[in-house]
Image (cartoon, rainbow, N blue to C red; front, side, top):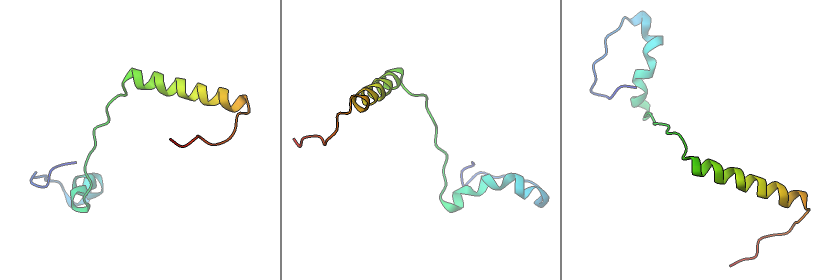
Length: 66
């Protein structure tokens, strides 16, 4: 997506191919997606395994309040 002050020229017949350049009018902006830190991926996997083990052991109830 282009900034509002960027000039783009194209034929009207090609508008459907260039519509993404007008997203700024509706307030859209691009977001850069960065790869996850390997530590976060490992921690998420461990938390998932812990959840599965607790579920399999039929432990139920709520967390005690602090």
